[in-house]
Image 1 (tube, rainbow, N blue to C red):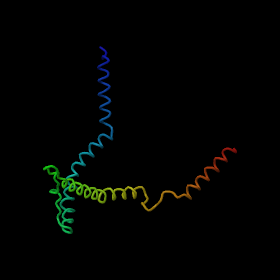
Image 2 (cartoon, one colour; image 1 turned 135 degrees about the vertical axis):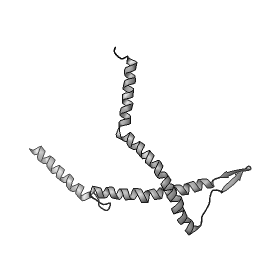
Image 3 (cartoon, one colour; image 1 turned 180 degrees about the vertical axis):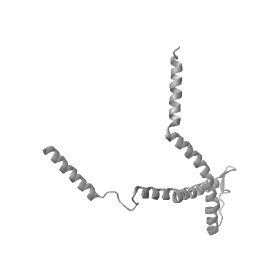
Image 4 (cartoon, rainbow, N blue to C red; image 1 turned 60 degrees about the vertical axis):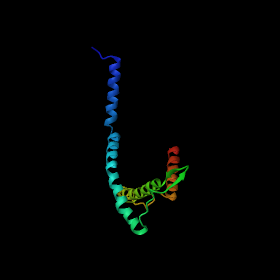
Length: 142
């Protein structure tokens, strides 16, 4: 007995979903999320314990969590937002300087060039354009 149109659609949907899940990007993304969640604890601990302690050693241990102002008898606390913003800046700086910058340098070295090198100069582009034009005129003459 042949499958009905509904069964065929369901089969095609499941096949499409399976293909979607088995693509490399989805699996890479899932791994990245899991690794990122685990790495968040490490970065937060480093920012709070190490960087925060260094900042406290040089400038005191500021606690913005209690900063607030009152409106009609209601306290509006904005200190926690300031603390979260400072923590975000610290975490972003740590990630940039300890992960992004070294990884970019490593990728440049793997490609065989450093960031000081410029891939092409205007003179190179002008010379290549001239060669292209000469080749085009030779082709037209032939």
